[in-house]
Length: 157
Image (tube, rainbow, N blue to C red):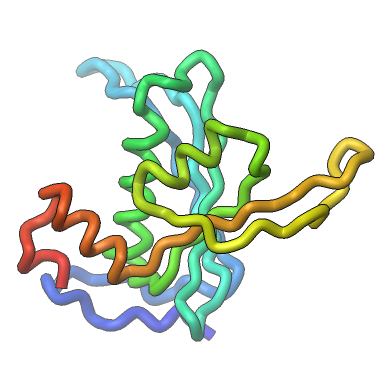
């Protein structure tokens, strides 16, 4: 079943052929010069998990040499904006190892909140590990974007 995208309020065409469990992988790159592309420092993945419920999962990988400079936060905000504004997601979430402080912080900075911690959810490298689920709803995202002055009040509706 195609992802049910309503018409966008600004009249721009939306995606109409995305399917359940499709993924979009986007490069995180530094700006390049006039004659060369930017340096790729990581990637962000957008997973369309439920068509009917408009659920989107995010994943990311960032080169350790470029961590701690705000690039991942900027990229995460851009991907969340893409999920809400272009894909019309209702909820965006990420599942992370709660021991990885950088991943937890990357969920929190753009406005996700902790929804659940699943105890001993997976075996990784021979040992049980927990899984933390962070999420934000479209209405929460819109309110945060307005509060930060990142969008005009009439653009968020």
